[in-house]
Image (cartoon, rainbow, N blue to C red; front, side, top):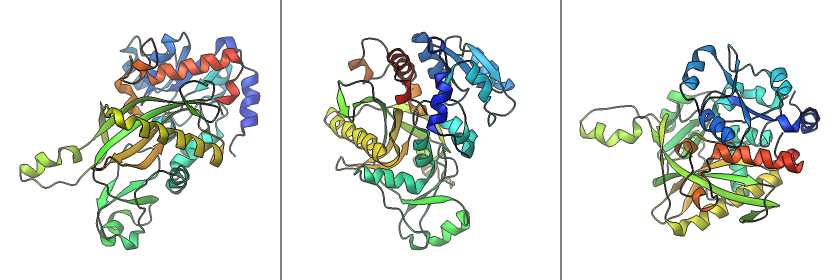
Length: 349
């Protein structure tokens, strides 16, 4: 049974707020989360398998202060984290490894874990985006596929297993009986803006009781699909793959920043209406067409790997903060401010 917010706040009430620690699984965005917390003077805990510890020890300024060694990353050591006054930071690997157990974890977690359920359920996700008034690609019934469509698996897969199909026959050949969503394939520039919603700050770009910050933007390199032109030029046939292998920084033309901020605000306000809000980091996955119109095809309700591009600040945070500000450091700072103001209940569930 999923833990209630009341239970989480009860656990949080027993924490020593002067000794808060930040914890996460050693994967995905852990290096910048630990690094950002270190810059803010907050101790960190890395949940790690024995074979992965050496990877993080190779980066002295990005490793956690302490390791919690587990044999299986699906087994989050709840009692140990509670004893260490730890706040858990969700990222893509944590969401994927814990799966349906995420809602059961009895550890205070940054953000609203209800938002992660809406992210995982593709139809709920589309309801959320539509409630925000955003333009979204058409969702196609498999029996009515009449154009190129991309088929996506549920959960935080990093593009793994996605496939383009053009007919119902192609769909059923690969995905019959699987939990997937079929979207029309959009043509344009893929852009992934990263946001932070702070319910504690009243200046800046207002949304609800706080503000939305545009922290950065990336685009993603997806396995062999991004090199398709070279493969085809060489006369080779291949099966397209969309597995994300890396990211690159993207700076939007300045006239589009207003659109990006409004989109972030709309997502925050729709989240508040639908399931109680989304404090902290999130990301929209978009395609910008030739008319400079944004189509949003996914939302990630937590920190995303594209933020790893700017551990010392982005082309957008440089205009908001007088010191280098990564998403990892922004998370740590919000937790520190909330602890001082006695408002952690606004940030965690």
